[in-house]
Length: 312
Image (cartoon, rainbow, N blue to C red; front, side, top):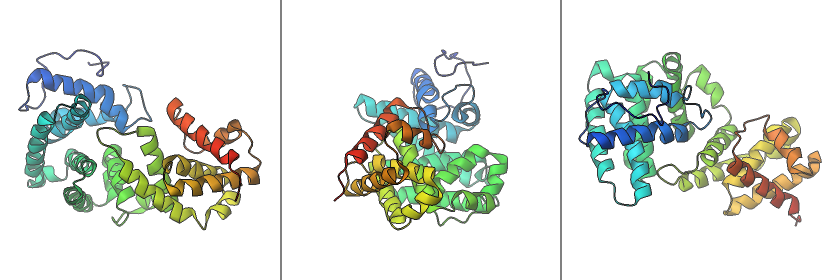
């Protein structure tokens, strides 16, 4: 039993799907996925023994060539981007990933598997990150059809919560996808949905591609949705509104909309008599909060700017 997949050496005779890359390089990609990528994808659980991409996703990938190639590709893109020596290995993995996924979706027995959905969702994210939005949209449309064939997102969730979570991530960007009861509850509020996306982007940081475009577009949506409702929300749901404004300030830093969030945060602080960072952060922790020194510093800095603001 592999007890520490992120750092323990791999047996050279371990069984996993064949690739066109040299075996030592494949093992390096495996280790990079398990020690880095899994936690970039799901930073809310930094434990090797419970992170869902280590304990749930990876066993599926070891038994499924398409998902294995797609998973390796995420690691390869990250390594290639850091090395700045081109993307030859990633391009090989991409070509083979697409070919293997096509084989799966043309087979009725494998098309509806969790592994197929996971692979296509990841391909959609990769293509979007590369700026290939048309190709990404094709993958998203494919996911929609497969989810519908499986009986809706709730049916997927009953079998695989992780796959359902991945589909839900797409729903954050594609709200027109028909959902049933559970997911409708999760996506009822556009404000909360967009703020949650922004918070995850802030916590994740860029993985193998910048998400600046996604963050900018989502911050615009959040500001537009909150503009005429935030004050009522403040007095009915004070802590939640503070969290929404906090996320907006950090996510919109450097763009004009950022000043709007900062101005409203200043007003909220006055209305609730919040004078220090400790006054604020204790409220934020009651909503959604991951202990991250870098992220907390960004939030604290924005609140200091809000307190220093002189209303015009």
